[in-house]
Image (cartoon, rainbow, N blue to C red; front, side, top):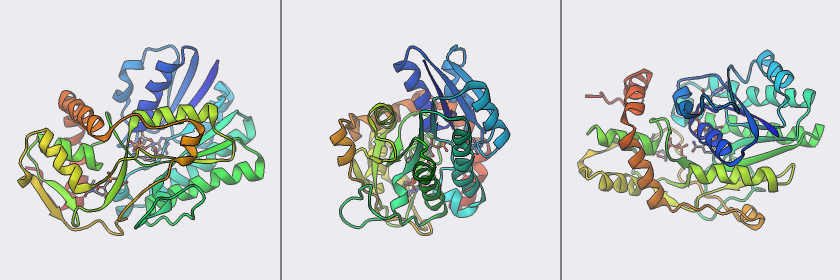
Amino acid sequence: MKTYLITGGCGFIGSNFVRYILSNEKECRIVNLDKLTYAGNPKNLSDVDNDDRYIFVHGDICDEKVVDEIFSDYHPDIVFNFAAESHVDRSIGKPDDFIRADMFGVFTLLEAMKLHGGELFVQISTDEVYGSIEKGEFSETDPLMPSNPYSASKAGGDRLAYSYYVTYKLPVIVTRASNNYGPFQYPEKLIPLFITNALEDQPLPLYGDGKNVRDWLYVEDHCSALHFIMTNGVLGETYNIGGGNEMQNIEITRLILDHLSKPEGLIRFVEDRKGHDQRYALSINKLRQLGWEPKHDFTDGLRTTIDWYVSNNNWWRKIKSGEFREYYEQTYNLKVV
Ligand code: NAD
Ligand code: TYD
């Protein structure tokens, strides 16, 4: 039986991944270490709270004592490090927490595995570490050119994890996923923000000309890729995980409005994000050759996601009436009415 340490398991992707492992592995133990920042919500896992295979520890990945206790008490075989500050706009306003969690937090976890041992350390990185690309796609050997404090701190964690493979022979794999979407995403990111604003007849604040491009990966596909890499990936390697769905932000916005039968008049073009990367694009040939492919088509995935937000309005309404409101009004200079 494997013991997993999953950090950041109360966030968007982490909570989907905890559920994915519990549904796919009968015998396992999962320790979820989460600081419960504004983005961490224990309710994201309320359905597995009573599962004997699941243990929640409230703590910070930067806290050596907590991390060491977890390794001493539970001896995790496999670590998936999802814990991070994850929102670009917040990193532009206040980078401090990003540098701590996304770099020093990775260091603390790596040191603990170096001391206590373990089978595999998966560092969840992002396509944003490559920076923007005008044409073509990034592959794993391309140079990293991160251009905002979020992506720069993620690049630091990404390469630090690799350095522990080279220097200390720690069993590390790094994964770089494109933009995820799906259930339980905090409503500050493009897709859930626009769905929930549209449902409330609030404006949808589109940066610049709305023509920036992202590749979209349904969160369940991300989880299946990570699970696949855990058994088929090669230590020391880096794997891009993309959804094969490149879209301009304006196209996504129109799809959301159309699906909810809301007017285009809700679109509000606002001042562009500082240092806004124009386009992200990934080649997933390396992972495809190993035998993994995304299963979800964007139109279906988006529809399922919209339906989830429609059916779970208590979940996001509670978030949007809390700290989110002040953050939102400051970021966009828009009053919630
Ligand atoms: P999220 O913001 O929804 O969740 C982050 C979680 O980490 C929260 O539960 C938070 O409480 C926890 N956390 C933050 N700092 C912590 C700390 N110091 N100690 C312990 N827990 C802490 O993020 P997400 O969108 O689920 O992203 C998860 C990971 O995937 C991140 O590492 C992110 O960089 C990476 N990633 C995200 C995307 C995306 O599109 N969302 C794409 C590629 C990679
Ligand atoms: P986001 O979801 O923040 O992800 P990332 O910046 O990590 O790619 O943003 C996705 C795209 O949507 C990005 O080009 C910025 C744009 N965007 C807006 O136009 N308006 C918004 O309110 C947000 C949150 C994002």
